[in-house]
Image (cartoon, rainbow, N blue to C red):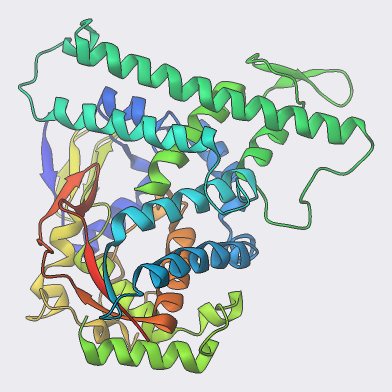
Length: 433
């Protein structure tokens, strides 16, 4: 199969925007698809469009802002533990922030799926935690499989590792079905009791949106449900659909200089104060922090590349793309292209995001298609707002209470395990202010 690498922003605009209808997402490897779930990441066509419309309200910025107080409580509890750990003679502590931020993210994902914190202490419930742990094991098996010589049909053989992967997949599904059934019964009980469905005035939970979309709360996978006039109509979502979307979100959701730190802290203290957690309105006014996050995402985008397949013969300016050809968009290479970003492309310089030109919709003065940490076009990551909101909130609250620098034990070794991440963790030394 022909594959062409495309990095020209002009051609990228055609691929993702003006001629996007002629391209589709390439098929994920079977092991990856099993892990990610047959949800938004892997669906195509009308079913993808329907699921996107259904799920998007849970990720609208106004809905996510309703979660800020709960998210802030989770961050505060994490920082309280750090403060206790730093009560030493030196007043500092080394912490691998990767592990802590993973747990924080798990709690936020639970909040998005269920519309509430899973446990009173802000940690995911035992059922949710087991899903995260099972998926982590699945990812380890999938990653190991990619590094071996490819043998056609090997994934179907009953090897020890394949049997373990199949068992993990069954356990993930069993745990998700159990959570879905529990929520379905709660909705049914609430509805039959003459009460409104829970949390109508609070943040919309993704699970409720999916269950309500089925048109009823019974536990079946039929493709037809009764309409309001007694006629049959196609079911918009089955239990299988809900399971696959939950697998997708559980998987996808989880995975400076001193002067700059002082500038960011000064902004946080000015906007939010020294002790109060940032409000939903405060976060929009943290411009310096936003520039720092954008520059971090430019240097280390979570998605390093995207592949699109031509559904028909397509003309992209002077380039003729035949049907079936794959176009590789190397996001990390585009983010490090000196012709787009300047000769300091490998330096950490948030100021490059400071001054957008008139009429530009992007947060920087470079071509819109030069910055795509969450993808581009209609398939751009639906959780982008959630990721940015959570990162801003956590960084602001850390700056209120700590100064920090890289630990001497830190080893700079980014690696790709589905997404870009530090191979040896991210140990940071924190000092109480």
